[in-house]
Image (cartoon, rainbow, N blue to C red; front, side, top):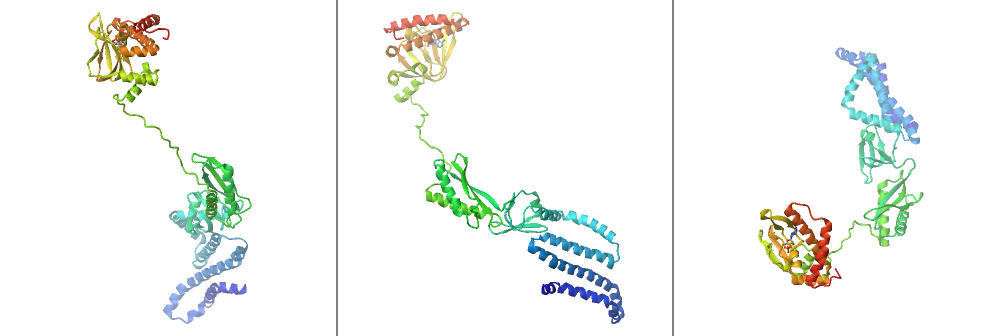
Length: 486
Ligand code: CMP
């Protein structure tokens, strides 16, 4: 110890002794000097010796404190370097104050006031540095983390703290690099200290497996994976690691593998790596893969985008969209599509003329038609209806044998299919219900046409019903069909 004292203190002691000797022999030295040198010596030397005395005394005191206070204390508790630095600053600042007061004979109060003013200016210029300093002091007193502990900072690094000084905190991350974080950044950050309150810190890795893997099997494999790594210096075997189901997602089932590390000895990054490697190995051995994003794909026939009315198949499909024939069987539709005739009418061309004899009816497949009926009140026929695709017309004359009740003209280029009375008769014989549907439509259309002609409202519902009942019977008779099925 004595040897160490001498070894550490001999330099400041020597310098201090030098200045003390200079102070004692100050006058006798004077005698041995020339006149001019004496003048300079007299002006400068007392200050130099005085300053030297204070400075070397401060140097000696700083070394004594380090040797007798910090080093013995440091063997029991880790004394932050910042505290040591602050004590040194106080020692040297006292020496400067002493120089101002005793060497230069100035008022210490005025010096401190001036120092305060200068301090404000310097403080403004160095405010970041000063914030660092104060947060550094707060960190030392509050001790949210200590040297050797593992921490994680929001928007900052994670790793092991190696030093907290008056301006920065140094952290060594998982890749072994040192990260120097200014203390003011730590003041804003949310810090996770893995070593507090207990050194055993629980960590979790999440693995997503396919929903088809039975949970009991998945948990068995994942438990084994965690256990395989525990008991090493990275992961603790007590508390025991475990696996649990965390969530069910679109991708599969999320399992969490929870394990513990001694945060004073190991960081989270490397232990996570070890556990994940172990999990992958165990899953590989068990033949279980990690879940991947997936979608069910199945084939369905392409929808037909364009129908060709020249093909029988497409005509059958188009017929099924006509409400009148919706109830027909596939064979009946097939037969009808074979016998009906396609006709194209240019815009403005009449398809049916009022008063003509009617031997067929029509279905409008493409285009638009206008129905005109003559009226006693006007020289020109008036439009009583507009027919859209999928509707039938010409049924009145065909079913009753009466002349056409109206003129039907193409409002634009239109495609219709014509069905002769003979073919309709065959169909009605098989499905007398069609006669009823057609007759109902006749009743409505007649009423609508009459209303349009006289600008009156439609015929009452009861009148229409009577008309239908009477007319259906007549129609079936006209076609020579037994009416019991209708
Ligand atoms: P038909 O009388 O054979 O010939 C003219 C066609 O015009 C007629 O059959 C009906 O199909 C149709 N028709 C007559 N009046 C109307 C109406 N008010 N609404 C819809 N279509 C009509």
